[in-house]
Length: 478
Image (cartoon, rainbow, N blue to C red; front, side, top):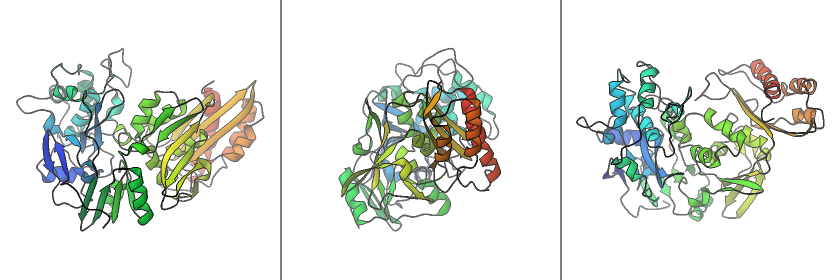
């Protein structure tokens, strides 16, 4: 075994410190809670699609010391929350004194069968406490109280209907001055603690430093790294995966770098998508377009940018955008660090140049950015869906001529890829409809799209060409 626990792993739940006990290292937060009688959180899908399992955890905030963050309890191994703080629907209020979110859901008819309600409550409460939520005029996705309906995009209701749930969300005022959950945000969240757990199904380790992680994967290169567990959790729940060694890397400071400099943007691999979205605050327009279309808020609260790249999936949403941004990856191992252009990172289906003893440390985006950018996602649903095709654009037009063009594609080959032939058909040519129509014909033949349950090969090819025309006619970034 690589390690032994130096302390009894425990988790603060609804204000009470509770030992994790003698459990499998692959036990999810959801199963652990329900085994202890906290049955508000439910299992609906076991893969982060429905939000019936939503709970709140105390995480480092971007606009406050602590931010109450809604996550899918069905995906996270409870061992990953050792030393952390969690609140379930039962901990928000009581039958005698409902929490404001619970009260509004009750009086506005936001629940029928009630199965999904606790999950909605936790996701809604996290948005209720979001720092910076300000009143305004509202629009079709934001209430006059500043409530962002995207915070509920990962919660499904099959019988109530969403209007009364939306009404409850839009009726919420600011938290009261004596609100204990709001006051809690002024103090730092629990610091990560070194964890070592062993069970008959394997071992779970949270090293105290990046050096500790690199040492472990050098010794055991088949170890499973885990951050948000939005991919691994599905493998464990649906496909019965049981890695013999799981290493948590989500709270390592060395993997949480963020800087926006003169020449480059640096994003730590363990930053969640929500953290990146809020810290960038629209300064990289292409990523600002990507984020709302990337799964749901519940998933983005846990999923990391390094994890999305680390899987090597050909249908991940981040690679096409990052390819268009000409991003590079800093890969780290005990042997040192090396920089790999993302365009050279993918080598085959879920295969990359990353060696078994390496991990992604940082994503680097060069500056300045192209003035014309866009992210197009073709999927069956507008939000919270897997791409059939995803395209990232970054084009620089000077004096009516295309000076530079980078186009990243996902879902049309065994790997994400650059549309090199289409780029060549655009560069040094006038930015006109004629040029774009010719290039669109080239783009329709990029990659090797396949037929599957999401889309046919011919549909994917057609969407590639139509996407470039849409980019031109919408004049994105012009």
